Length: 226
Length: 395
Ligand SMILES: Nc1ncnc2c1ncn2[C@@H]1O[C@H](COP(=O)(O)OP(=O)(O)OP(=O)(O)O)[C@@H](O)[C@H]1O
Ligand SMILES: [Mg+2]
Image (cartoon, each protein chain N blue to C red):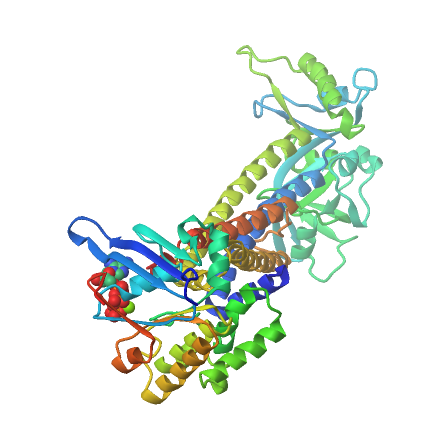
């Protein structure tokens, strides 16, 4: 939709960790616009600031300087409860480290975002099972995270991000632990969502994965180089 | 999210960490049970002391001479106290001589610590009922008949399996006929109140004690409200009969059973307070244990809160869930602690029957719930305020 305002609008954002000798500029003046229904891949060497940028995009962290707008709304001006609403209704986030809740079954993990949006438990269970089925894990629904392989945990994390059918899907290396077959399945799901008009931003190290996106962004030392 | 849903989340949280949950509850359980039981033991022993003193009779005054062997209390003094005009609130006066003596029956000996010579009024005044047989009479006293009423301990020691009434025993070389056995009485202090024998004072003086001073005079007031007036009445009489010595020291002193009860109760109260302090410390230690468990899990729980926030949980929902978890744990732990204490108070502990003080239950429960809420809720409240990414990175 040309001419409409961007879904993600990052304006000259920096993120600085630590101080003095240990000061790290994880992001150093990043400006980025992502339009509705875009499919963007972010690449870059390890430590280039990809996850840092993603956490800011997901409203999990705040920039040190600069502004970040979602749908034209400055995230810095939102209250705690408004942020909770944005994270729950608008964004689906896949963590690089999965971040599943321990000692809690896969299906209960996937249900969690639905519970916080007030969906009744029967409907929740149905949609969670559907999302698990989508990533090929319907038969592992009752397993707890420590009973799942790394790739399976990653797919549960993907299912949890998909389950609310968010307008914006942010995935930090969603295929990092997957073989080519599982990678293909997850990417197919992403492409279906993209075709349905959802915006997707993903981080990857794999060129084949990056090549599937409409747009490729490369980070180097906290700066966008292409 | 409905409150019902949040409650279900809290229950799932408790169930997901069974070891931590049960350790937390155990800590609270022990703290609460210890406080309630220790206070109950203190209270029980206080009650036991006052029961014993009440058994002695709280209507009585005991007159004792301060200067041993020097004239002091005589039968004449005792007679003077029994004066309806000068001492209208005195119900009865019993002169008492008391010595130790050996009772011999059928070749076996038993030494009583108190062989008491007195008048028949003594039995009611000192609250000693006669179980089998009967007390001696005023006539026995007037005739100095050698009859005696023995205590339970003596009956058991000297006449195992025999009815002692009617039997003759040798006391201090003279034959006495047992006419009755005293009812069992709870003992005050270190002496066994049941290890005694009572006989007419005339007979005891004739046989063993001689005609010296009396050991004491037991004065019974007309009612528990008249003990103090009776005391001042007999003081007036005694001051006339037994003037203070040249050095100004009184020749006698009066022991007041209700005063004794008061001081003893005070002592017992101090004891209870002391036990209460010990109990409070154990509650504190239990609280530190809970804190420890909670702190150990703060990292894990903080990460969990970070995940929940990242998925869009509002702070209010997170706080409510964690507060419900903490409350449930401390309420269940506290409830079990009360149950354990109630169960434990059915048994004797160090010879004392515990009597539960309701306020200690309220206090122990209140404190444990506060500790649980505070140490369960505080880290959660702090974590819920963090940005999701900071909560996720917490170590
Ligand atoms: N909490 C933090 N405190 C201090 N420095 C940090 C923190 N988080 C990240 N950094 C630093 O910021 C830089 C960027 O980190 P980031 O996690 O964004 O890298 P990345 O591009 O995601 O790398 P990878 O591909 O290995 O995941 C790194 O140099 C890292 O050391
Ligand atoms: Mg990363």
